[in-house]
Length: 297
Picture 1: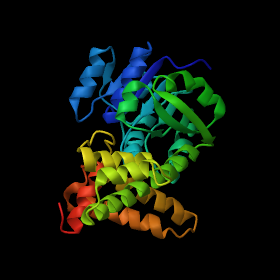
Picture 2 (picture 1 turned 60 degrees about the vertical axis):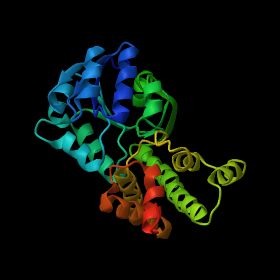
Picture 3 (picture 1 turned 90 degrees about the vertical axis):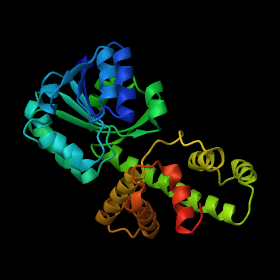
Picture 4 (picture 1 turned 180 degrees about the vertical axis):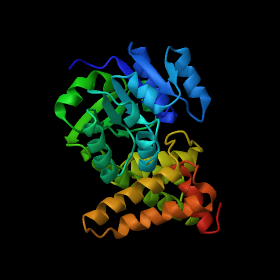
């Protein structure tokens, strides 16, 4: 089949807006659905996108639908509600899910979409809204290679790294492993920075030392930028999302019969932060949260 021309986008938030902007810029027809924040939706409409009231109507008008929602319950609601994706599904349409999702939920959705003649691939993302706007996201994909080859020109509108990880669900599985690594680094970094500060260490000197050695990481640099330079723009990722992603990782491992003492501790740290009023704050502010647990600012 030919490359899709009519693209639907559900989830025009921090990441979705950049995705949609690049799709429009490359000449594709874009349909969008209303979001709680009108500003990014209105911007895409001003660039030529068409707005639809519900997932059913958007899906019915599209060759391919990209979903960028917060979690698996939201994705299931988008698919299964009376005016959802399944209600508007037509033969051959491709659903590409960029959500960080639970693989068991992904498998269920994919099977139900296939039963109605549609096709499902998982295409979760790495990197940040800055890269989304620049068209330089990384994608982990799971699904039929022929379908993924068919939609690759669309994915390349907003991605410069696309890795096929295996069958449906493989992309979401790799995403959870990747996020556990990065968010685990983030939690360790927050504790290390607070310990250094409480011990009287010059944080700029610490950054120089870490930057030149094996302990360096992208996550360290992002949290150090916040702690030292008060720059909280490098990782616009909410603590609520961090809690959810590590919880999904632990759920995956429970299904494997695997013990995860470190991941459980990481999840509890983000959960405590979220439950004490920091859920909408970005992950680098875990430095402040850890300091607060220790009676410091």
